[in-house]
Image 1 (cartoon, protein in one colour):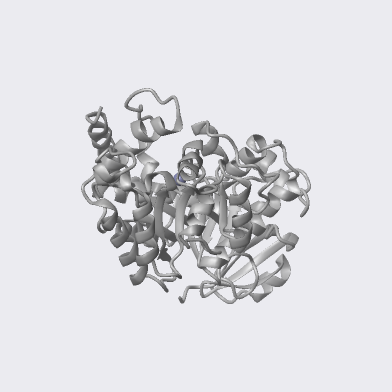
Image 2 (tube, rainbow, N blue to C red):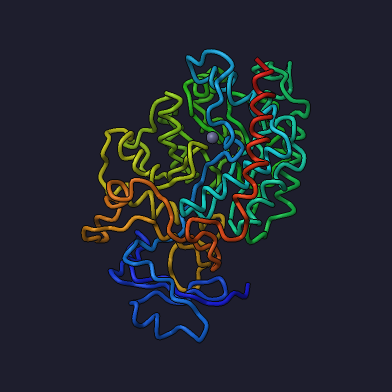
Length: 447
Ligand SMILES: [Zn+2]
């Protein structure tokens, strides 16, 4: 990529993993980080016509990464479930499954575009999305990928395979949708094959959750999924999932995936709230990615990931927002043994997140020269001293949310002055309001 160079600086430059400059700057050229140093030395390196973006004392951090999101939920705000939701199963059956059944091409496209604008507004440069649209399966991942590309963002997309679409064969037997698991697999496999080395958007094998995937289906996934293709699944979100796996003779949801040979270092396992000690041992062994979604878990009332037993994890939003700083604050307040050690939360937020991101995009993550230039400058202006040690405290108690001042992806300015730069977001709004209203009407008719 050839883009004009620029520098971002005159603020705290930190990667949360050791690099810390009190008044630093980052020089970016051709999509990559060229140098990180003090303001004067970086200014002196600028060539004619290259801009110095003065952040006025704000925080300059690596671009944020959301490893578990559902862009399709963007238009669910304010939707009333189709009946009482006393437990997790009812939330799925009366809100999410009827909703994902009535999504269509316009709502998928617009929710992805506007959801990703919102991600950029919160300094997020990479999103791993988990998508479900049971009446619109084929081509749905291309719709999402086009949205990522039009905003200059990186991502991993997948379609959530679930037996719930197959009627009588499903453990749920709901018969929603008309495509079935084979269609879900084809969508995942086809996208993954076509985008294996794509610099921006790659694929994964999406699976809903153990409890909506029968034994035959998982055995078939094992056969058709190439070994190197990562899976992305909800795992142990609610007690239902653990009980389902135990009833089948497994030690738990992680053990079941292991027995079907679906676990490796790039398996993305969201939640892990209801898991057995054997599950945690298998997780440790496989080094699969554990994704902690504190706001979603609190919202669904399913409990909380046990941080005393599971120290290695990354933070995700699970569709609640795309605000990673707010999610960090929620992790602090809602975590097991709340108000955890800030060093631990900082390690999860920066180091673990960087390391997981590099498993999928090896030249992304961090601020070292040579890396693809993904930067977040928060709107927050610290008035008290910032140190490497108290940086998580500034994010939790100072920033309060992760509104961005400037977001850079692959060396391009993607968000600035309160607006995304590659797309006219405002021009989409009338169409989005009409599409979301029609979606709400289709949803209500399912009652
Ligand atoms: Zn989820």
